[in-house]
Image 1 (cartoon, helix red, strand yellow):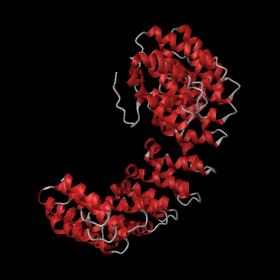
Image 2: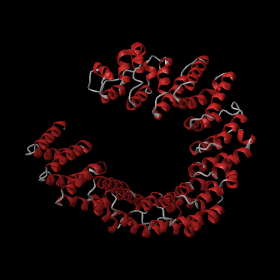
Image 3: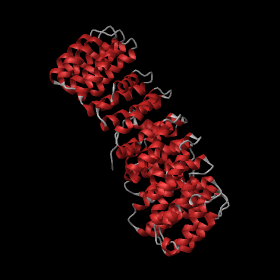
Image 4: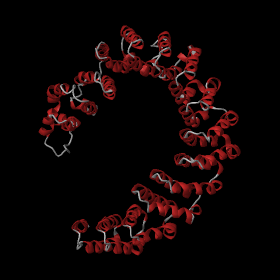
Length: 579
C-alpha cells in the first residue's frame, strides 16, 4: 500500500475531525485528503471505518461530492488492500446524485473497478446488480450511469443478461423523460461497437426511434452512433440505412443538429471512405458554408482544414474556393476568424501556382481585416502559406499588419503578435528584423501590461537562440540595457528580467564586460524593488555561471547587505550565505 506524506501542515487527527465540520471549506479540505487519511489508518480501518463514514457524506453539498469522487478515484483501490468491491457501493450511491460530473465520474470508476476483478462470474454478478438497481431507482438521473455501464460490460455477460440489458436500453430510448432519452442517445455509440453481439435490428430500431424524437439534443447524438456503426460490418450490411440516416441529420430542421453533423464531417468521411464522402456528403459541407446561420458558416469554415483532405483538388479549386471568396468579407467576425484558422491548409494541397492565384488574395484580404482576432488567427497559421510560396514574397505585406497589431488596444492581441517575430527570424533570418520591427519589440518591452512585457522578454531569448548573441548585442540588447536610465521603474525592472531570462545564453566574458556594470549601477537605484531584484539576478548569475562571475556578484551583494531597506538587506545577506 502506498505511503502518502502529510504535506498539509495539519495533524492527521484534525483532518479526520474536519470531515464532520459545519464549515464546508473544512470538509472539502479533508475530503481532498482522504487518501492521506486512508494511508495513515491502514487498509483494515479504511474498509471498516472510513468507507462507512464516507457513505454518510453522500447527502452533502455538490462541492463536497465533486471532491469526494475525485479523491476516491485516486489510487483508492490500493488503499483498501486491492478489494475493489469495498468501493462499489459508494460509487453506486454517487451515481444517484444531482451533479452530472459526479455521476459520470462515479460510473467510470465502477467500470474501472470491474476491470480489476479477476473472477468473470463476479464481474457479471456485481455489474448486473448495480445496473438493475440504478435502473429501478426512483431518481431518473441514475439512468445516466446505466447508459454508461451497459456498453462497458455488455460483452462480458451471458446471453440472457445481454437480452435484459437490450430491453433496458429499449425502454430508456422511449422514456417519457427527455433527459433519460438523452443519456441513452449520448452513449449508444459505445453499445454499437459491440455489433454483431448487438444485432442490426435492435440498432435500427433504436436509431429510428431517436431520429423521430422531438428533442434536437437527442437527435444530434445519432451522428456518433452512426460513425461507430460505420466502423463495423454493420455499414456493409445496412449501407443505405446508414447513409440515409446521415442525410436526414444533415437536413434536419434544427441548426444545432446540422451544426453537430458538420462538426463531425471529417470523422464521417473517414468512416465511409473518401469516395463515400465525395459522393454523399461533400455537397452538404459546401451548402453549410452558405447557410443563413452564422454558427453554421463558422463551423463549416473551421472544418475546411480536415475535410479538404477528403476532397479532390479540382473540387477544391472549382467548388470550395469560390465560396471562401464570398465569406472572406462576411459581416460576422466569427465566420471570418474561422476562415482564417483553416483556409491556409489548402495551400499544400493545391500547389504553389494555385495558392498564389487563389489563396493569396484571400490571405491579403484577411490580413487587413478590421477585427484584430482574425489577423492574429491568420498569423498563427502563417507557416502553411510560407512553406508553399516562401517567406520573402509575404514579408512586405506582413510588416504593416504586424505594426498595427502591435498597437492594438487589447493587450492579449499585443502579446500574441510578439510570438510572430521568432517565426520570421527563423524563416527569413536577421534581414526581416529591421529597425522598424525591432522598435516594435522594444515598445512591447515598455508596455503598461506585465504579460506583454514578459512575452517580449521571452521572445528576446528566442531571437538570441536563433540569431546568436553577437547579433542580439549589436541590434537589440544595447537598446534594452538603456532602459536602466528611464524614469519609470517598470522599464528598469525589464532590464533585470531580461538578464534573468537570457542568463543561460550569456557567456562569462559578456557578463563581466556588460552585465556587471549594469548591476553595479542598478544596485544604487532609488527604488527598493529594483535593488531587491538586483539581489535575485546576482545570485542567479553566480549560481548558474560560476567561475569568474562569482566574485563580482559577491561584491554587488556585499554592497546591498548594508542597504537601508530591511528586506533588500536580508536578501543580500541570505544570498551571500548561500554562496
